[in-house]
Length: 279
Image (cartoon, rainbow, N blue to C red; front, side, top):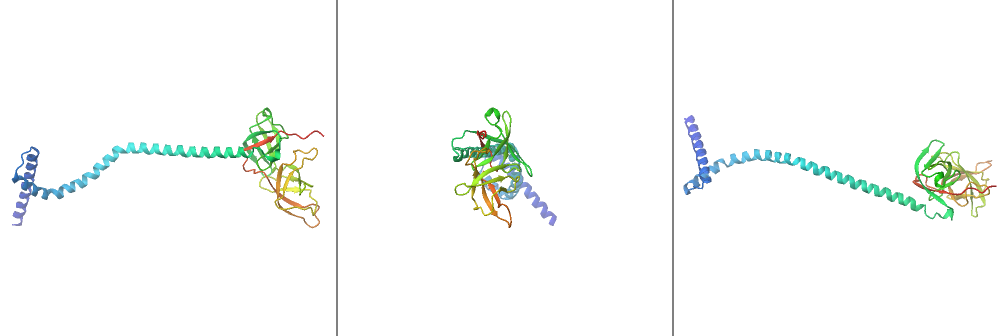
């Protein structure tokens, strides 16, 4: 009995499927009838869930293939976008570098301590330092008017001295170099003298040969002395006092000083075309 009911139900479904297909065919050919519209409604109700299930399966597949066909175009657009971003970032970095270079050059204009002394502006192309040695190489040499013994200055003060000069390059010994010695004066009227000695990169310079009880103040600036046969013209800032004290029984004050020039920013410097007068 149950088998008979299932058979009749299956037969009914088959008939509905056939009728639906026929109705669809008739509808496509424009031969619809009021009677068929009701049967179409029943068929639609029966097969609507089936149609929705099929669409749920087919839609993601369609979307996948659509995405696959568009993937190449999207990838090309993304690559072009990344390229544009990279170019903008590089341009911004280049402008920032040029601004820093211009700022460094502007600092060298009209340095008050040079007065009217002639100079050659040079760019640092190399730097060398060790425990005791501190030098830089500039892109100017003998052919550009740079000779051995010429002072080199930055915006803050004395940088060093030219110790080697080639055709279009030269080597500068910085004031922090262990062999550097600069005669200086200090005090309210520059009545006191000292020798500023380099101690190597990373170490404080010292001001030597200052007698005990000589008035010294923290932050006080020491200038090139310009005394007879001095290696530098007078009045160039060399160092400022960091600390000082006099030990018991010491023959001189112990004074630590810092360079006035910012030796960590030496992209451009001025070579002063000055040599000490003959004795």
